[in-house]
Image (cartoon, rainbow, N blue to C red; front, side, top):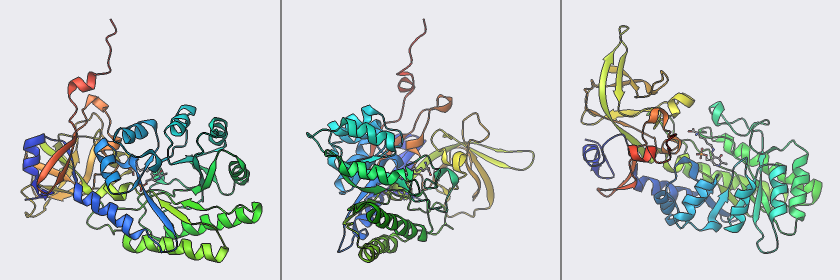
Length: 420
Ligand code: LLP
């Protein structure tokens, strides 16, 4: 009988109903500690920044702060959530490829730790806004042009990506010179992120090499020797039993050793390195619990299992053809001898959670637990078909705690106005 954090799925269903997002709090904390512990090098300073787009609520921001990580925010909503949770603004990095003047203003007003600029337009806007009262730390998003082996929609570092500026673009160097010279900007270095769900570890070392060689060419052309560097996130996780798991204990120190070796060989001034994991902090710690409503076999013999959720709480299968593993509560040890397609309630043929999965025969009211749904599920949930967004609970030591309440129909209508 499957338990999460010491609580059975049946207890969770009885207490909170389904669909339900469930997080194993200890697992999130263990991942934070793995990053903190292994992203270390005797000759380099480091900080781990949690990419909050993967999953952010007030409770989650509190957890991240208690584990000593920083927070990457890409919108005013994320910043607002973090500040409301009491997250220290000096440990927030502000990203985003399309910042408004208002967002930059807020970042300056709240003394956000690092502002990562995307392009010359943003850089000019920021240089206009700053004054001697607060000198922000600033980085510039670059594109090292690394083709990480992942889904096209989550690759971010190709030369014509919407994010950042290509290292082959000559304007990058002039922008860096302008930012370094500005009296009210403390320019630290570059930020780059090559994509998400990367399982090929060499992509991370190629990334380090390419960026630091770029640092050497900046130094050669301008004499500017940058001191900090941010390599983004992208560390892949295990979705299926058959997936390999990235060995963080090995990859993280190897990345830093690569930085140290190259820095020493090329005489670079780099002294601090950041990374920004999102998915790998929360992905495997999160689960979605559904109740099976109905079962149907088509004339062609396809077995559908209809659950009480849908693509509104689980979009990744429809969007990225992502694959998931699941179990049926109470039937964990039975033979998996029936092939099912797990489908939701939304009016859309693409509303599939799992295309083909072997499970024991299921019946209405059985509970289905979909695994590895902690990242980019709650944060990408929608109200399509006016479906409501599930509650989120954290479970630890046999106790559960709601950190986001289930949406009610009243909540759903809370912004609607009558026409007449
Ligand atoms: N830093 C930056 C600048 C990013 O753009 C991202 C992700 C991260 C860090 C964190 O990446 P992670 O460690 O989570 O791979 N919705 C997609 C993923 C989009 C990722 C966007 N940026 C998905 O569900 O697969």
